[in-house]
Length: 227
Image (tube, rainbow, N blue to C red; front, side, top):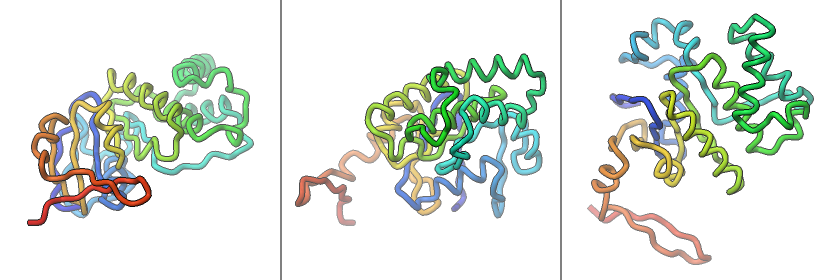
């Protein structure tokens, strides 16, 4: 990271960059899983670096890659994470688990083993886990990678709904994900923020600086002008 400074308001915030740009490192630092070399991070009145336990109480995190035991049933797994989140009353916990499974459209498959789930279903279960405790900040790292078009749309619609009540940081290298959802974004490359602001303003700043070009085989490549 190279002197990153960001202000993330409520709603959907996109962190856009190619693979290896530093997105996951920044997400892990914000999620209290990795120590920064220097600097400060505030979540409201909380010092993210010094008050990690308190931050984790109000944080939801969906990492780029995670694993569930394939034989565990979805409802049981979510109930387990609810206990870890501090929901000890059985009746209250059952109500929360049911509500989250319905919100993520997994209620009808709650008794299926996670190992039978599609990639999109696993991602939605990950969101249900991230939503436990009504977090103020939710971090999702490369959430649509590998999803088919239908699951991608369903997942993005879910994130958009969540963004109405919380601050959501969406880290991705897929421009369309940010363009469709986010009211603010930042572009990161080699650990440095290149541009930040509303999508329309950022696009205006780079207009004429990059363009698509057809390549053999029917694909496209993106080029920058020579200095």
